[in-house]
Image 1 (cartoon, rainbow, N blue to C red):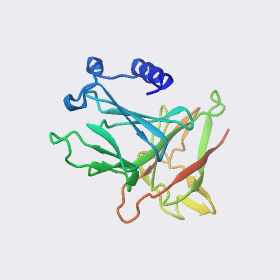
Image 2 (image 1 turned 120 degrees about the vertical axis):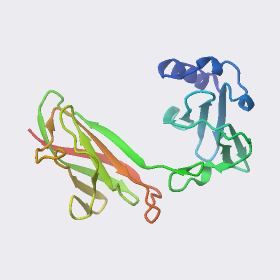
Image 3 (image 1 turned 45 degrees about the vertical axis):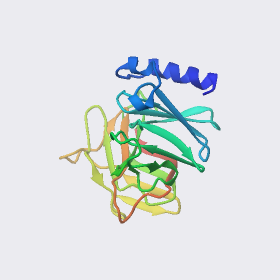
Image 4 (image 1 turned 180 degrees about the vertical axis):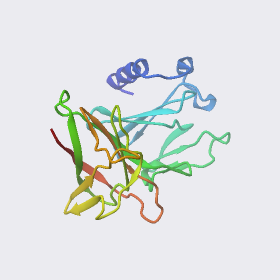
Length: 222
């Protein structure tokens, strides 16, 4: 681990909540203690897992020279094998359920499949009360998100299904989503800011392959 990356990791440990920090003093993956690192030469990512903690791994990209994600898992071991990054889960048997991180499909990790989502905060002109109307997405790849949820300090929509040509429409790379009304009412979402969560619930018949969200614009009136 380079000195700059080691410094950043040490700073991150102090900035975020990690249970049982004493377990990070001694590196021993067999005892589920310490910090475990590995390098993915394909993606140019460094993975740093904190063992014996509350399941936490961070990833650092060499090309961008910055941290790219927090992951809610910490494998028992990382190994780069013939150009592939593999790991095992935290079962008692060290080499049970070997998982290839370079063949990730359909958001499956250690035989568990997870939903994908992104949450944004729209707060342009933050002191101004606004009426929120549409969300416009510039997307490459498919499929698109299939649920949306929005909320502010006073209102929430709950999770709403996105149905093509009803509340979501497609034109070239652009998708326009009509923001739902407040849950159990006809009230329009209005506040100085709005959180918007776009979800793709797991669907084995329509899995996400390579979806890239290039830009998102939230439309509102004053």
